[in-house]
Image 1 (cartoon, rainbow, N blue to C red):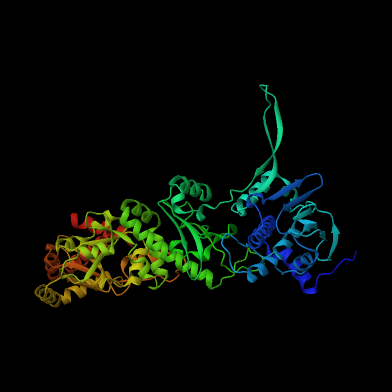
Image 2: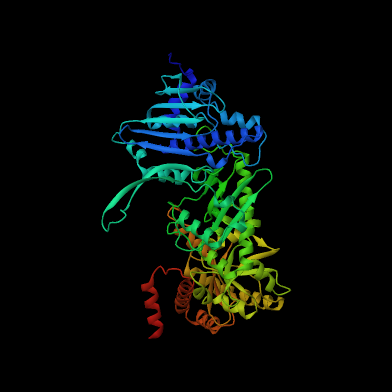
Length: 626
C-alpha cells in the first residue's frame, strides 16, 4: 500500500486551513455532521429517481466517543463513497462532491445540500492526529478505507463494511497547556456543539448517553443506564408554517435563544421568495439590554444555511438603526467561502439585508398602528438609536426612519409622531416648532415656550442630545420646515408687530449697544423682542448652532476646540424691565450695566448654562437689595 501525496498547493491550503482559517476548533463537528447530512440527502434523492423503497426515518447520524481509545466516531448510513470518490473528494482539497451534486441536478423539493464536502472535512485535523474514513457506496459490494495523518498524505485500501454509508474515526490529539482535546469526548460538550450548530439538521443525530435513576424495587439504590438519545430537534421553528406555531412557542424560543426574561414586543416570521430565498424569524424586544448603548454591544442576526449555523452574529444583515432586532436568517442561496465561518459579502447577502430593512420598517409601522402602547415602550427603549440613524445616514434614510421617530409634545405632554403633529397643524402654519432641554418640565419653563403656546402653536420637546442633530438631517417633514423657538429662525409676529419692534430697536440702539459692550464678547448682540409674554429676558441663538447643540458638542471629549453659538440677549419689549433699563441708562449707567449682567446671568441659568462668576452675580444682587 502506497501513501499518496496531496498536491503542493493542497498541502499548503490544508496547513493554512487547520492553523488559521477556523477560529473555533469545535467547528469540526458541525462540518462532519453537515457532510453526513449531505450524504443522506444524496441517498434519498437517488431513491426518488430510481423509485427505491427507502424510508427516510431510517437515516441517522451517530456520534460515538471512546475516552479510553481517545477516538470520536461519526457514522452515517447515507450514499457512501467508492474508492474513486474517496480519491476525488478527500484526496483533492477543496473538491466538493456535494457541490458537484448540487450543480449537476435541478433543485428538487425536500432535498437540500448543506455544504461542500472537502475543505470542511479537513477541519477535523484541528483536533485529530489521524483520521480514518471507512465508506461503502450504495449498491456496491466493496468498501474502502481512507487514512491520513495530515499534510504528509493519505492511503486508500479495501476493507470490510456490511452496509452503505460512512464511518469517520478521529484520533484526537494529546492535550496541551492551551488546548483541551478531551472535552470533545464528553457527553455535555458534544450535546452543546450539536445544539449550537446542528440542532436543525433534518436527520436524527444520536449518541449513547448515560444517566442514573432509582433502581426498581429499592428506595435509595441507583443504577447507571445507557440509552440512545437524539441530540437535535431536527425541525427548525422558522421553517414551520406560522399557523402551526403557538405564541408560547415563539416566546419560549426567544427567551431561550436570546436570553431575555420578558416576552418580545413583536414577532416577525416570514419566508421571502424572489431574487433570493430565505426564511427569517425576527423579534422586537420590549426593553434594551444593559449594554445596548455601550461599545461592547454586538449587533447581528444568527445566520443559517439550511439549518446549520454559519455565524452567530452577522452584523451585515442589520443597519445600525435596527441593531436592537434579534433573530435569525436561514438561506440556501448564500455564497460561502471554504470555511463556512467566513461569509462572503456577495450580492445575495445585500439583497437579504435590504429585504430585512423593509420588513422591519413595515412591521414597526404596523406595531405603532395596532398597539400604540407597545410601540411607545419599544421607542422609549430604542428611539435614540433610530434618531442616531437619521443623523448618521446624512438624510439618506429619512424615508425609512422619519415615520418611526416620536417626541413628547405640548399637546397633552404625550409622545407624538411627526405625521400626527402635522395633522394637527393650523391651516396657515408652515413650520414645525420645537424646543430643547433636559426634560419636558424644564423645557416648559423656557421663556419662549409661553409665548408660542399663547399663539396656539404646538411645540415638540427635544430632550435627548441627538434630537436636534437628527432633525437637522431630516430638514423637513411633509413639506414643513423645522424651527427651534430659541433661535432667530422663528417668526410669529404680524407685520404691524414687526414694524413696532423695529422702531423700538432703532430708538434704543445706543443703549442696546452699551449693554452688549458691558456684557462682552460672550454675546453677539442685545435687542428687544416680542417673543416673550411674561418673562423679562431670554437667550436666542443665531445661525446653525443652537444653545443645546453647543452644550452637546462641548461635552464630547473628542472636541478639543470649543464650539460657540452666536448668542443674542433678547429683552421683552413689553416688560417693565425694558423701561427700567431705559431710565437707568439715562441716569445711572453703572447701575444699568449691573442690570445687564444680572439679566444675562438670569437668562443663562434659565437655559441651563453655567454662570462664569457667581460671586460677582451674588454681590450685584445684594447691592440692588440694599
